[in-house]
Amino acid sequence: MDATGKALNITTGTGLGDYTTASTNALLGTTLAEKNNLSVGSTFTINDQTYTVAGLFDAGTAFGNNAAYLTLPTAQTLAGTPGELSSMVVTVDSLDNVATAKTELQSALGSTTADVTQGQNLETAVSSLGSVKNVSFVAFIAALGTAGLIILLIMVMLVRERRREIGVLKAIGAPNRTIGLQFVLEALVLAAMGSAVGAIIASFASGGIASALVSTNTTTTAATTGRGAAIAGAAGGAGGAGFPGGGTGFPGGQGGPFGGASQLLTSVTASASPGVIAGGIAAVFGVAIIGALVPALLTARIRPVEVLRGE
Image 1 (cartoon, rainbow, N blue to C red):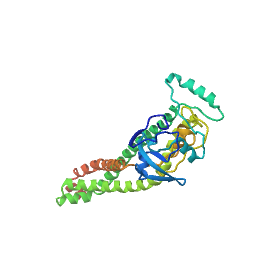
Image 2: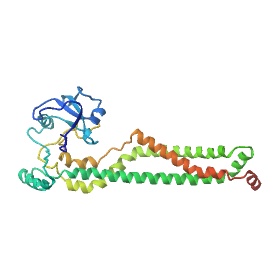
Image 3: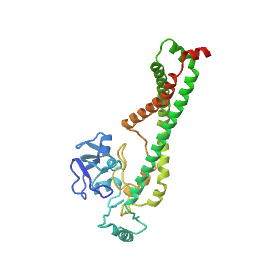
Image 4: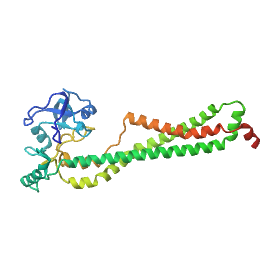
């Protein structure tokens, strides 16, 4: 099972067998394995100890798929805490028994050596990402609307300033479609230049902005979780990292799988998939075209005789 007590879905290879026996085999999340170019049978080294990938699993979440699992004695040795646990998960047979189980576990473990918190705390922490997503989406729509309005105003001003040029083009036989297309292309160039500048700024500022948004939304959650572990936390050491680009190396890092949620969510790396980038580019150019349509239509109403006579 994973750090939340759910059974792992092993997609390739086999499990670790007896978790109470020392072994150099490891289970890796699909995302972690992909980032490190590892597959079943591959080996990797942590603290001069070589491990073999026995299987890959899909936890169904981004955090879960960035984890690696070892047998208990092996993880304890690697963490430098032999015979100790950093966290454990207790599953009760009914939701009605959660509060009672929490009280009894805290009493048995002692308040000075462990914190016992309900597993819903992780869900609360992760749910804050939904708020960040909603805020980001609203900001994206607002930015698109603002960009469209700015392009519209700029192109209307250009049409008014270039009435004589448009009149001359019409006088020599240029069709309205060609003249209108010229303004649309100018709007697209303007959008492309703005997108390039925005991309450069975003590449430097996105990480800080994302972390600030997540930190703001997880302040309350972090205070709630405190030192908490899962449904039942035990005292002990910390888990390891060990992999570039991964999350916690294996469950039981600082504060346990749930207690560390606030730490994971207060520092994030902003990234965008190719699909998101393509969608953003399409949206920007779509707004540019829409913003240029009105000025392009205005060119059709300009009469060469009136323009030239006025000059």
